[in-house]
Length: 578
Image 1 (spheres, rainbow, N blue to C red):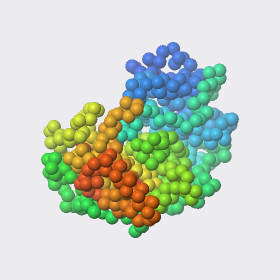
Image 2: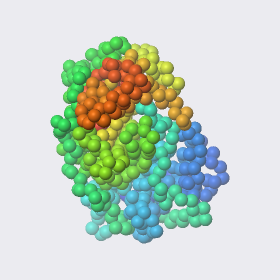
Image 3: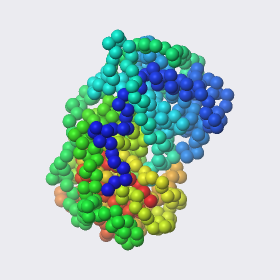
Image 4: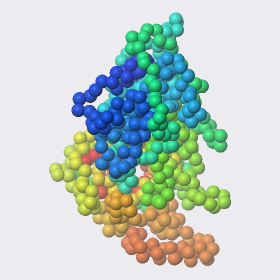
């Protein structure tokens, strides 16, 4: 009952069976960069373009600075184009040196790892910061070639046959066309919109105005090139010295002590019962647009049940990210409403090893502080990221539910709490918006609303979700504009964890803090009084709740306030539609 079928284990069309060689992508990249594009926005950068081929690092730094002068929505496309092409020239210089058999370790060996890692870093930063305008398919083709190198050098299936005479691997099948990458969608859950993430400090971003960047010329007709080998010691992911070896799978069972007590559970309906017609009827009027858990709707996804492509296996996720080299934007901190919240760009491997298996609090019986009772343990979350245009190799493991394509009333009904925001109501979507939510136990999305209907599909692990109807908005105490002028009206001022710690009747685990020493009891009484004064009516507000497990899909109607907390390491996919 789905609009599209994910590729099977025998028919994965997202990645070509035979990746292109390094020589082929070198020639293609050079010819593409030198071939002018009619009406290309990069021409607005003016005479500095004459130095692009010779000094790409300097122009990349210039473009980076220009993109941070104004809010992201106001960044001129020419600077995004300049950053992208500069990153490609930098990557091309490394690839050409590899093809010529030159030493590409250089002074940056210890800082950036092997040459594959350096190429990935350059191109991924372009995708994350700019979306890679006009170069999306070229960049994906380069990644495909790198995957072929990694599979040959670092283990994995044999994708190429080497000639006995030592000649290069030959390309016998042209790669399948990739889905075009689009600029990452802005946060709609109250996160910091229009702000570019700050890249990790890296030699790539240091100005080198007095240095030229010689790029060896390549003869496109060169025959029998040397086999591609890693010029430096092959870079393999290694867990930090203080961390154990990765488990073979993420936890599949929710321990009893981590199971919330559900007072107002959301109904669960099998997909065989909730037909498309019944779901469309459910969405036809505001009064029937209520949260529903749909079961057995995604059981056929390879991401869920394939023995070779299941997302519950960390090793598979690493293999689809060039052995963890691909970069992803990570949120650091308990929640985006906290003052110490921030963002960082990490390799997927670093994120897996450093954060996904850390022991994080998931219930009142697990302290958030260390033995010295000093600072809370920091959480990391790959949240609301368009991972599937960034990493198309994972997109083939899922499909968009048909539920996202049902007809809605015209014009669609928009709750008052959404239409009253200063930001305009989003226009009708041509296709659903997909976002990934991947993180360890303890990650939190605070109470907020979205301007879209949502099917939240749980693939790995367990999540607790609580929802309040639009009619309860007066008890949610929406935030206004923050100090930067960003409208946070879709995010509640109420910290559900703080309130639940002293009001057991709304706590996730029913703990209210009343037991203990007399001094603590008095402190709890004082905290309850202050929270009652600050948020009158919140404790009495009506809500529904659930625990999502692998294979569950939760329909979240537009405008409903919702709080989400990971109870175990978790991987979810949201499908927004209107």
